[in-house]
Image 1: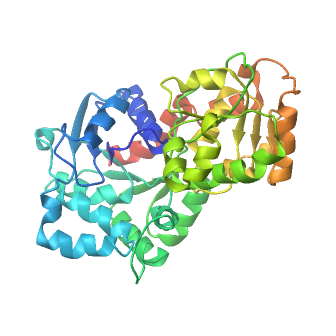
Image 2: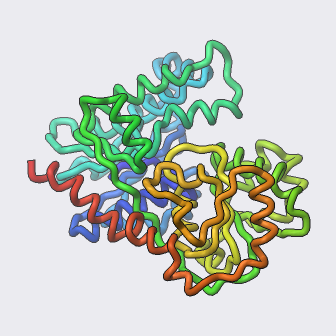
Image 3: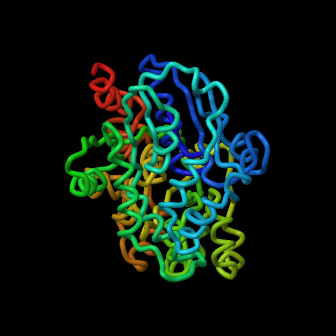
Length: 395
């Protein structure tokens, strides 16, 4: 399995689930973590140290680490092509070029490989070099249209005109995707979009396995859980600016490394709400288990929301916008422990009422937990992954 060397985010949790599923199916698993920025060779450097510290639960029979070195990123061709594109906001080309100069880790070429499950189109140049001379099926997991994420990310960056457009970056993404034998998508919206964009490719919908969180007894906390990405920042900014002032006196606790993102993007907003931010914790399951209510104030973002699935798995009462359930072929109005609120006023009213709500029955039997077990549990994912991978291996 080839994946970006990311941690503390939804994609990392997807990677954890992938390796667990393949091992449950009887495979010997290799994890190849690819750094997405110039860095010292592993294990040196702050980026690698942070990754190692946060990825101990990545269960593989053997782990490999690789990425572009700082010296290779100073080569004249790379400077002229990749760096020049990046200053105009072309992150699609930037990541492809980084993957091209990532050195193969020692020993990887000697491994017997029967199937490559690679994550994100920009890892495919590395996969092509890794498999040079071998005929091995490649299953690409897209995890959203990345060009869309780049446009969002560029809104908070400093680039020079002419700016890279969505169409420019999408064309690069699609060109590399054509190299995969089958494209796996994490949600229905994504599958439908890619099926239109690449009609000649093979597409499958496979919801990711999200690790279950405990269905605890609940408590007094009203919590938000969010990792640091731009969509989460926009959503949390909406909550803090427009919702929270309409629910005075209600204390909300915010968990995850989103605190760093808010501090860097809007220091005044962070300072005004500093007391609410609890940062990243080692046991997020305990937070869910002790929560009276979990908030999903999602107004921005694309792809399946991992934190929404986690919240569903907890069985806790949820207050959410409809956008929190994007990409899921479900009707959230049918979930009895979910309150839907799409305007600031409605969301604030639901938050104010949260402390007076009385739960009906154990959380293990809640509607959201039952739905999690059917669609997003490790067992459900392993079954779907087997159905996608078996034809490739048999051929």
